[in-house]
Image 1 (tube, chains in turn yellow, cyan):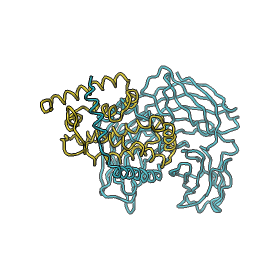
Image 2: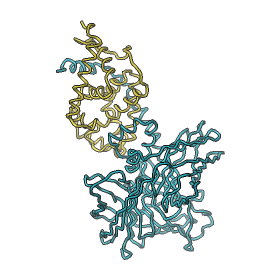
Image 3: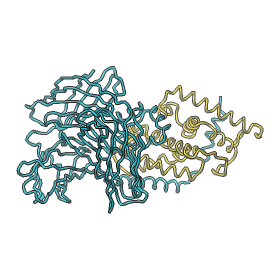
Length: 177
Length: 435
């Protein structure tokens, strides 16, 4: 378990301009950031570029952090904004290339199918699935990150999962083994 | 209901392999980029010329407020607006003006010898005009500085300019810089057809741009409130006369009792607060007050013009004040000595370069104010300084202050600089009802 108060202390020092505290924080959350980036951008190269840019943006705006206990959501939010901007900029369609090194296949849908289905979702659904399942965030924290009521988050999440299932069944229904 | 999907989604990302080394490289690269920019930015000077009343300038490079989600949505649908919002991020009033469609797109540009000045847009009210501009160069230049900014009326209606803020310079290695020219007027803006003349200077290069433009949006009338309330803080009496709220800023007129023992320099945390506790602070990067006399100010706050609060208060807790016999800093420009300064000894290392008197200024906490207004020579004659700067280092507790003195080497006697800000405070708890 991470020691939360130690973490908050780091955030406070980082806000005051302590560079090593800032770098420690990024180290602490780099895996979460990377996975978030990857779930949106799908290429290792782009995810790394995202890490660079988000480190830069976080450093520049560290002073806007209001509540140290929500530093992680603040950071993830910067990443999501960046990813959405990137996707909008490129307006690209990504097909399943050999992008990720993945092990094993799952029972029902294989992972490539799942990924493609994810990318076919609208921005909000992708965002909410990323926060809930990849970041393992609680509904309450997602609501805070997205600045909307918890009820709305639940509705969105349900819609996202429904859309995901529709995509999976529509696309790969008869390919399932 | 969706257990199967949920399970798979969770598994999917547990399996991702993370390239740890590349990750650390990326973090370091991002960090380096931010560091080098912070250094550069801290040297950026904002030049302000005051033509009329003495003004207090507050330099806030790093302040920022959060955008409302609604507004964030709004800006993303208009191309080019992110740039603009970056500039006004620390001013709720200007953000509200943009949000309420009070920003006017102009899009006039002129190109000369590979340098292009574009007037992107404007926000105008009776009291001020903010022009958003972008300066671009084809080649990377050493540096490009705005040397003069003039505004003229083309339709015969008089322009009564009080102050001009000239925007920041294009720095070495940059090929584009966006900023604002801000004009504030001493009588209401009536001219609609205008001409902007900007001259820029770099190494071995000087260009003047002339841009004609029209203001087409109807100018919103100010909202005026009469206050006439006196408050007493640590024995100092202050009377709030009235408040005028314009789209670009709110102006609060205050008068101090001449019998006060201290001179009030700045209403540091004066703010507007509505019935929901929403707060509008002082202008955080620009002119925060016009001083009619040492005892009479017009204070400028971020505007809530486009909100319609049911109740509105002025709230203050902290004022900058110094004893009346300490209001002047006196220096000897020949011996490079500071002869007199208030308690605290915040100023040091007086030096002279290119007709600038330069001080180091150290404080315990960040202090973003410019310090001086009127400057007098050894005979008590007023010196027209023209321009001054303050540049803040990374740490922000140490700054460099430069004051331009024409023909500095000819100044024989001690030079006296009147303080308009100083890190010394009186405290209280006052709430004044506006409506």
